[in-house]
Image (cartoon, rainbow, N blue to C red; front, side, top):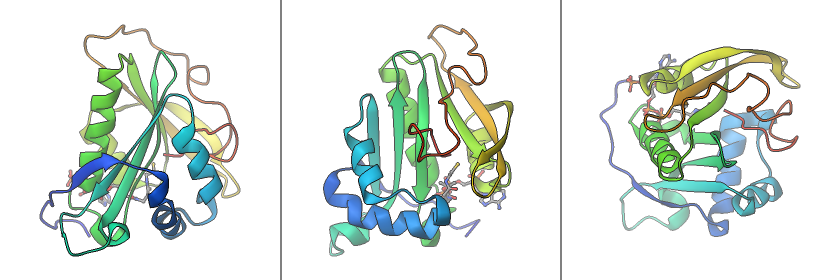
Length: 188
Ligand SMILES: CC(C)(COP(=O)(O)OP(=O)(O)OC[C@H]1O[C@@H](n2cnc3c(N)ncnc32)[C@H](O)[C@@H]1OP(=O)(O)O)[C@@H](O)C(=O)NCCC(=O)NCCS
């Protein structure tokens, strides 16, 4: 879906009412790594979490039909971690992922995070392109981070101007765990 014109979306908080649609999108987009409704509900209620939804502006559509993307952040008091970011396949390449990521970065700045951290599959070229466009830099490689697929992840970091610029040690400030099902490691 690359090269389509950019689309304006409305950003709003993601809530428990949205979870059935999010579970459907999870299955479409993440396959074996999809988060369940229970995991998502725990995420929405988790400490330091902030989740945002992207809606198409089309009024006549139902709430579920309008919801085409979502993203989440965890602020632990020092750094912010991108927990997930996702856009419905039919709407990718139209700037919605960029709008969601911009909202996460804004939030991280607002809460005073030093940096935004994330992990991304080494073969996820669209996500890598998006993160690099925002200035994220590769910190290191986590071998076999995504299981059971056994795919490596890049850890990436965006330093936030005006905040303390201490460089976290890879594997220390980044969340522990192999994937989202363990200790809520960020999936991206
Ligand atoms: C990653 C994701 C959120 C991006 O959302 P999106 O709405 O398509 O993002 P945008 O349209 O804002 O930008 C995508 C960028 O990737 C580029 N891109 C898309 N497919 C690409 C590919 N195969 N190779 C390289 N770049 C690609 C686009 O051209 C665009 O860059 P540009 O703005 O410089 O042109 C979306 O692809 C997605 O949901 N993927 C499935 C779930 C996922 O992998 N989430 C991230 C986990 S780390």
